[in-house]
Image (cartoon, rainbow, N blue to C red; front, side, top):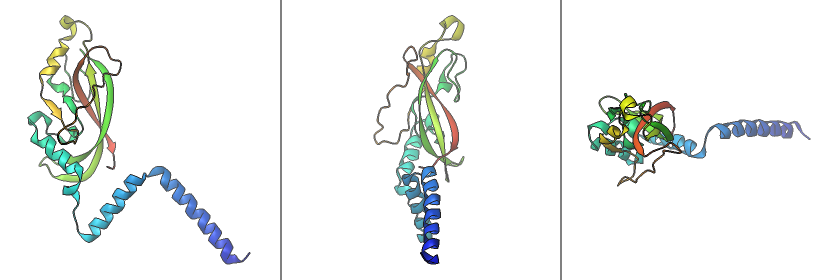
Length: 185
């Protein structure tokens, strides 16, 4: 065996190890997006208006005033901030409801003026359901149903999302969201 063959084998093994580790951290879809963005940036072409993400944001902005935030690109429901029972917030179910199941979406971040930043964040949506405790003590969870219904799930026309009460007693009342780390569409 010559020295060249030994070097090629070591190089092949090292390359295989590096690529194996890389493939465990990065999905094919994410890699295609990164390569595509790189190629388009070299060519000076902006493909962003053609991507479905841009349609999602436009659709959310076209809805009423309560549904215009970039964080709501994947919501299907009413925000818990409209509940008058014990302080529903964007991050937690109101005290008068039970926490149900959740889903998550990768949303494009926008500035206060509505411009895309190029960053994407994971947003987790959780449905709040039922009536916890008595209405006299905790407030009426039916008050959560008075807010605007936001439909930011990216389909034209919007496609209904199943209710994610997921074992929580009672009917759907509202949805809260939490923003997490960076994601790649």
